Length: 172
Ligand SMILES: [Zn+2]
Image 1 (spheres, rainbow, N blue to C red):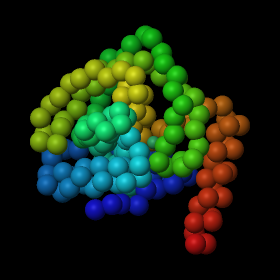
Image 2: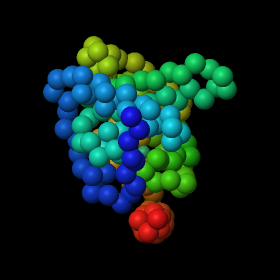
Image 3: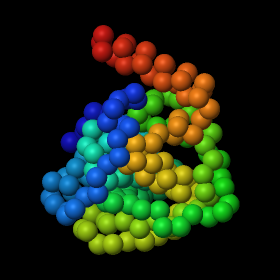
Image 4: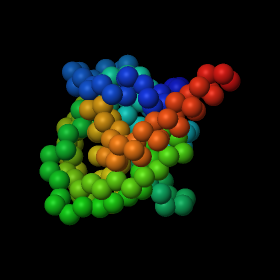
């Protein structure tokens, strides 16, 4: 089932999320809903707080090759275990901040540990777009948005645009 995506500014996007204690069918269904919502948007990553659920859960699929099979990843309690010294700059966007993009510099590669959909502990190294995306999504679990990396003036400009967008949407 597709879920509505919260638009910044929203207090739920600024809160640190709680670790998932035990995997349950409800949580698995939530992860499936998040994947459906992400693919539909379309986006390459989605964090639970973006649909108003304050759990440490993210989904992503950065496979951009035309015609390639989807590579959905579900991560419960994801943690960055190690980051490369090399940095990489990508133009980032966010489903909670539609149509706004800005360059963000982050470690080029990260090693991440998480629990998969079956509750099995996993560990993998990500680089390129996957590394940027997984860091962006884990930031969401700590109440941090990509615009928090920007200069205050640019951040305020984007926030004002989003406030206007929300007013327009509320009016219908
Ligand atoms: Zn985002």
